Image (cartoon, rainbow, N blue to C red; front, side):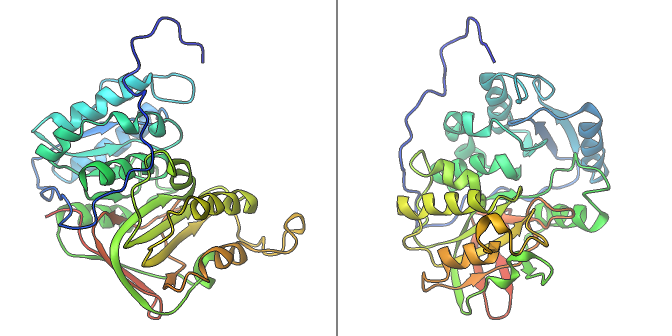
Amino acid sequence: MHPSSTPPDPLNTSAGLRPGPRTGSPLRAPRLRPGDRVRIVSPSSRPSRRDVERGAAVLASWGLRVEVGDHVFDQWGPMAGRDWDRLADLNAAFADPGVRAVFATRGGAGAYRIADGLDTDAVRRDPKPLIGFSDVTHLHLALWRECRLATVHGPFLTHGDDVLDSGTVQALRHALTETEPVTLHADPNEVTEAVTVDGTATGVLIGGLLTALSTEAGAGLPSLDGAILFLEHPMGGLRNVDRALTQLRRSGVLNGLRGVALGQFFGFEGDVTASQDGGWSIADVLIEHFGGLGIPVLGGLPVGHRNRPATLPLGTEAILDGTAGTLTVGSAVT
């Protein structure tokens, strides 16, 4: 990328490690109803038009009026346009009082570049959920840190039938249109299911993509004191996982955790004794980092980058039961 003449960078801020609020209720948006307007934006990488049309059709089938941000299909390097254009789409959606939810088209790259430029005053005036995962985790963290906004770690509706099925889509719809808690059960087929420490814990659920959490450590990661930490990882690489977890531990952000919820760590299936890693498995690495914290740990949650991922509210009170193998999370909408 070789930018020529550019306007002043509105994102050139120094966030530092800023603790998030620990008390009080999360900021939650009203649940979606038929006839509501929703906005599709691309804060990270560029989607295809076909994929966006697919996602818009799903939302329209719920009775929603679907709008697409001005810069959704822009291209700048690996991202959907320049930083200020992606940010403008996102902030315009948050500032529009008629828009009731904001759907990201995909993850990829770029949300970390605009997380400090969010119009937090607009979010506080008129809360609405942001839906997405992967690179969008940077925005979930910023919205919690600055506004205590409840958001949704949910699948991208731009994905096709090879990733989504009717149950996956219905679970996302239910999480946005109903106010019951969401309960997930550990899946014995997930590689993280072996990483469990019995016990129960209650706390606000914060987290998402592991590398996003480690990137934000020292650059705007909210305090995790009193929280339940949720993590998932998409691309294998045992040493990358160990490096990211070591960064979190060394930065001190794991201090005060009440529990750890582990989703899908994709790319480690069948690779239990990789020779280049001395026979360590992903379970060994996760136990090494979390097993000695003296708090409950629940692995095996079906949330992350594999097909048919579950929907998980973020920023609301959760109950983790390592003994029963369940995570119950309060609704992100009211």
